[in-house]
Image 1: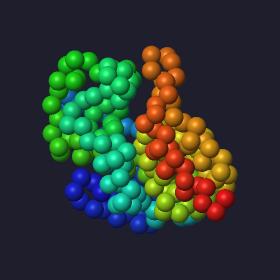
Image 2: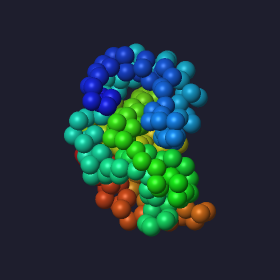
Image 3: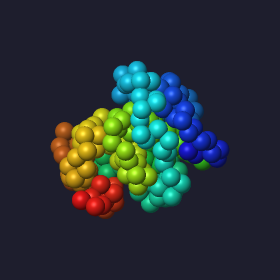
Image 4: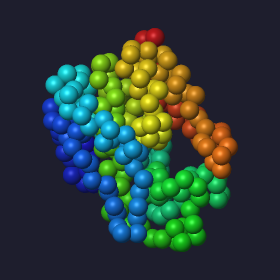
Length: 215
């Protein structure tokens, strides 16, 4: 796994690592990223501890190719704050797909500068939490590398809570159902309305594909 510029291999200790508290990647006092799996993380810490020795996916981590694809193609790199919808719509985000808060950015946020180090640190931490979300929730079904990569990408984008149904279907062995669950999630809630996001269609197609192979 890549943490900034340092490659760290957790191996058998990966789930033990996920069971420990993960520090937020506060890029600076003025940067307050909302990381994808934080809401669920502490509630499932005990479950992670109990599955360290039994989880068939304990040695998996996001592949280098998948990480580069997420960074450069699926998310993209924005050197500042932006709204993830079109124009002044969507939710305030920054860097590489890191959600700051629901609703558009304020003018002050849009003008706030960010360094490359802040952006990369927040991305690495968000990837780490997405990996841990998959490892905590998929404890019975053995995943291929492609399936693990797809779930990390999906959880990174939706948050662990948003990926809950997909996690459940995968862990029960309902892989086709998991693929359908992923493909159906192409909407964003903006100002209380569900808005179709065309840019998510190709991403969801790629994320669902590993669960249809051999079906």
